[in-house]
Image (cartoon, rainbow, N blue to C red; front, side, top):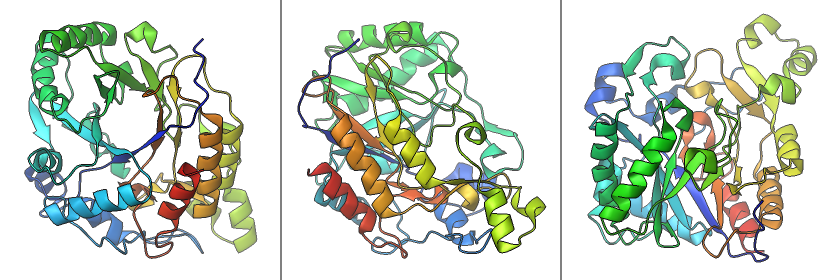
Amino acid sequence: MFEPMNHKQLRAIAFHLPQFHPIPENNEFWGKGFTEWTNVTLASPRFPNHYQPHLPSDLGFYDLRLEEARLAQEEYAKTYGLSGFCYYHYWFQGKKILNEPLDRKLANEKEDLPFMICWANENWTRNWDGQNNQVLLEQKYSEADDILHFEEFLRFFNDKRYIRVKDKPVLMVYRTSLFPDIKKTAMLWQELAEKNGLPGLYLIAVKGINQFNTTPEAIGFDAMVDFQPNFTETYSQRLPNLLEKITSKLGLNQNKLAENRVYDYNELVDKCCNADWPNFKFFPCVTPSWDNSARRKSGAIIFENASPEKYGKWLTTIVNKFKPYSNDENFIFINAWNEWAEGNHLEPCRRWGLKYLEHTALALNQ
């Protein structure tokens, strides 16, 4: 068991989605000009008082190929107390997807917000829109690919803005359970890091998304990060479903509403604030809200009653509860900075304005 340090020098890191610019693959899969904004602007309420669509205010419908958009994001993040972004990284056996925003940041010293990457190592399928499981880009694993991929990682690791622990670049992997032998891959990456003049890597696995039951050490990793909402356990078993309450109160067609799963954000916050943490290095995570009905025509997961105040209470509780494991093992993650089609974003929106950012700053500046 690790004994955390008793101080509050925390680094708040927000997950960052780069899918706000057109790419050839999305043009082919979803139609010409598709970006994340496409689904966001087409969203509509599923029941009375359902907050949809989520629409941006201050930053507008930005294109992340533009320096001005990326600089504006960083300025807001720094102003309200964030220490960095964790960018999703997409790699399919040498094929890179949605890499242009981060590539442009690497080439631009004015974009000085620290960053790390999380390899989103799932297949790209049509499942995310609730239609079918057709594989669009398949993820395959091999030692040769591990080596080739590490060469790509080095572009980031050698950047002075890259986030480190004990001078080791931090690399997060989203679904370690999909690897045939993740420990072997981890050991290979550590060897390659040392051969390239690095003291090693600091590897973080994401806990959740139907992940394994194990410790980070057992797979050659240093720590795990929570990922909220955590779908490891079925929410229907953990949280009361609001369907019956909503349908009876509003006289709605329950069969129609049952196409979606609706839960109470307040219940999620209360459970997470009171949950026990595992006895290994484990970085907490909070989410400002969640509603992926913009992406899914059916089978959406919706957390009703989210608010900046309730989010602020959750983040404040985590800030008070979490003690870093060392001077730089001090991360609190926020899911997310800009997942607009999943309804979880710190960026200003037309309903709440700057309130989520303001409550973030209040919680972090205690």
